[in-house]
Length: 147
Length: 162
Image 1 (cartoon, each protein chain N blue to C red):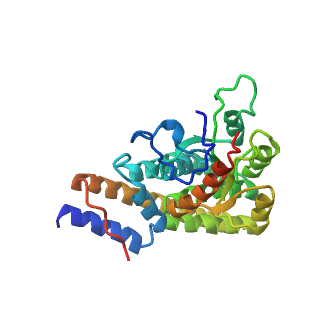
Image 2 (cartoon, rainbow over the protein chains, first blue to last red):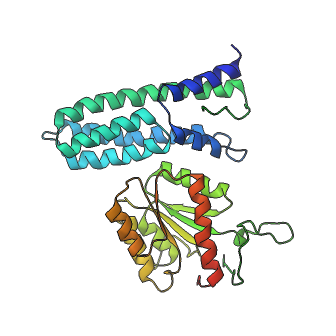
Image 3 (spheres, one colour):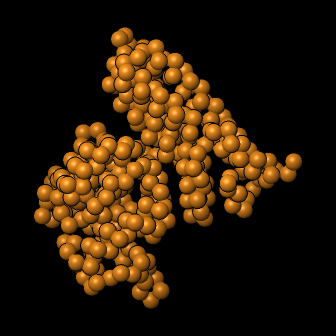
């Protein structure tokens, strides 16, 4: 398959499978000649910045009993960032996690956190592949919008 | 960096003199957010609409930049046409910053817009009552940025940005 078509197909799948939402398109719309790699840059920034938060969350999760307020604060930040890059599934898990925090449900938090970590890692891999492919395909015409 | 727009001006931010956009002619927005991702995003959004942007990570830094900081502040005082601030920030919230700005005779005319990821009616009302121009939900979009221009133009018309 032609490389450009591959890229378009991959992009489409990311939306269709619910990994990305409309906010990602907002990011794409901001990409221009001045910032031709804006989307990749902001996604990279997200993964770099959130690594710290993930660490904080994991450390907090090791404490017993769990400090739900603290966890909720961390997750609030994390949710905000994931929302800003259009990371749909990650955001959804973050929301769920916060619900469990508010309910003081430790098991729910632990379970949801595993899911969140999984989605976070999966998305990273997919986006890395996507950006790499997109770079190989060369400067594309504006990607088609999923309707 | 004096915003000498004392004449009534409804022109777009990109006013030109002999075809050139002078740095000082463009409207200057101060964006405050503790999230580096959101700072990057808002900076791009605003720059794409031809605003000059300064981003800072806290209310404290914002106040320093506005001239309300300590004596030996790192920041040189700058004129701004609008402040956009996140609500949830450690130490000083967006609401606290709003209050400080509105309490200052030097700064109270500057329109302040609050951003929040949470849609909490009591929070929204509180901010609006304290003098915020708008309360917008994150993530901020290009359509939101177009609305902001109305608030800034209004201030320039009064010529009351000191």
